[in-house]
Image (cartoon, rainbow, N blue to C red; front, side):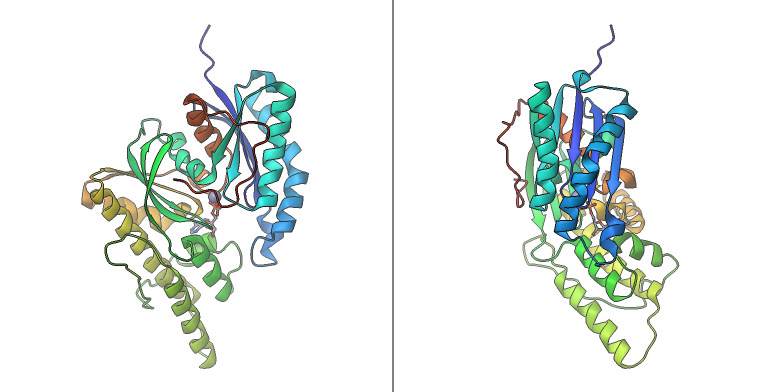
Length: 338
Ligand code: KG4
Ligand code: ZN
């Protein structure tokens, strides 16, 4: 009989997506169900933690059922349950963790806790079946901006991090200020198409002897510029402003990611996290990687933003190296990657 592979049920609930997925051998997606709450948070301009927790409770069982039925499997066909244990909103994380524990308690399946950032990185294994460590990964999301040296499937070294805001936050805040709404990243991405990226000049922060990021300066400069123009009753060209602002962030991310590859002598580069869905970031990184002799790949947009297939993949590699968590596992809102 053909080997069925190791089937992992992945569960993700760290922010505003309730997601469940079945993944085989960390590489093949059998199902990828996502219940997004983004529309409910949009009217508040950002994620409201209390609303997120309540909505996860409502969505978790239907999403689990959908993931299993799409995969045409039952709990008894699985090998383990992987769940995001942090970082994220504590009330939101606890919903996924409680569901995972309940399944493990009833079925006897092993529980594998997974870091959310590690999950984002693993989305690249789902996209490229030939990707193996070592490689460098730029992880850019609503809460994180890291450059990580992935030495092995479960061994990571942080080469750079943000010292203040995450890239996604920088997108979300300015999108709100120019009236595009939440979530800002995809809206700035769309608005900037056709815009003039040299229409506005924004500062770029660099630290001596470090590839760390800082996005608070560019964010404040953009807000000041908006206020100045409003005071002078000048109309802001949303597409020019979005294109210039996005370009400044993307150039910084790309430059640091390529320098990081060169620093560790690695010629393989990936991206992960919600901001990595950005169309301009993908094309600029592609172009600059070729110039630098680096092979670059990225996941499809649906695997860049929060999903559970990435947790099923990262969970497989943890399962394979023997990670088993107890049913007293907690949520870790500030879980570090290293
Ligand atoms: O990874 P993710 O779904 O959740 C977190 O772990 O934070 O990332 C969400 C972030 C938000 O800030 C959103 O605005 C940003 O990713 N984002 C984008 C794009 N799609 C989502 N940023 C830029 N361009 C996009 N196309
Ligand atoms: Zn995320």
